[in-house]
Amino acid sequence: MIITMASVSLDGFFEGPDHDIDWHHMSEELHSHINDELARMTTFVDGRRNHELMLEAWPHAEDHPDWPQAMRDFGPIWRDTPKIVYSRTRQFTEWNTETRTEVVPDEIRKLEGDTMVGGNELLQTFFEHDLIDEIRLYVNPVAIGAGTPFFRKPNALALKGTRAFGNGVVLLTYGRR
Image (tube, rainbow, N blue to C red; front, top):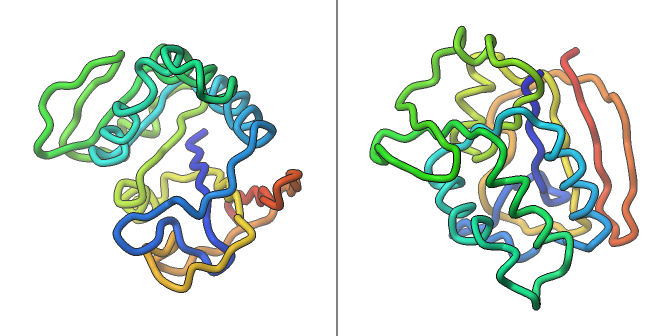
């Protein structure tokens, strides 16, 4: 199954102006939940920009004793999970990662297990090729008014589940209609 998980604002933005995400409401409870979900994935698929953000933090997460435990716990999950990064400029990357230049839908459909797709630009390509089976939106209790919208084209979805977290974030899980 091809899955995407994303934090969004109440007004549907993936990130604010200038790629700002400091409005995300993260808590130990929410991060632990996300770790549990991501630990089940067999592959992470990212765009170059999202992958480079991950490279800034996760390879050495355990070296930060001041970080919350759930953040330190994510480091090994990220490092150990096989990754595919789509980039036209990055030809090499580390940490169990394969680099590709173009999304080939038939190759994606052949991936086994659950695959997590991250990065808004890449996600839009996956939507265009109808590759997303499940969308997990972590709706943050904030309206930011501007930024990068999560959805750029209409998508008919079926609600599969909900969950509220103590910090006000609500998980809405959608599948294909």
